[in-house]
Length: 116
Image (cartoon, rainbow, N blue to C red; front, side):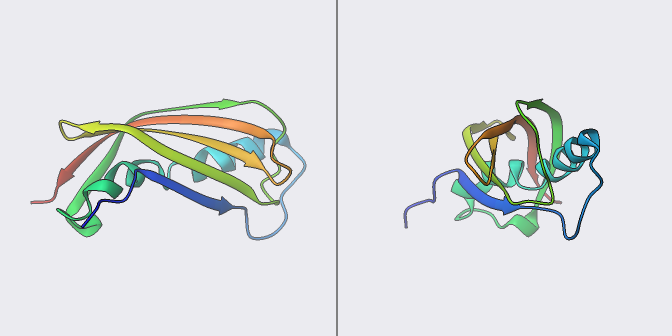
């Protein structure tokens, strides 16, 4: 069987309303951005290993904010992984507002190893 490409798209938003402080919206996005990055690097390898059998640990995580973010509205998080090897994976993501504006970019490198 053919492996899936190392890409993932997910819509994210908070459950409820948030204060008007832009720094809080940025902090919430930074926190949420860590959820799907490294798992995207694993996607092509799921025929050899299951997520439950892996240990994923962030080695570095960088984020750039390009515009106003409103986390109580839907944001599209588009992720890809151009490289994985040597028990590491590199991922990058783009966050788009509901109206299609690029509001943030993120990159992460992480360690990916089998448990046990």
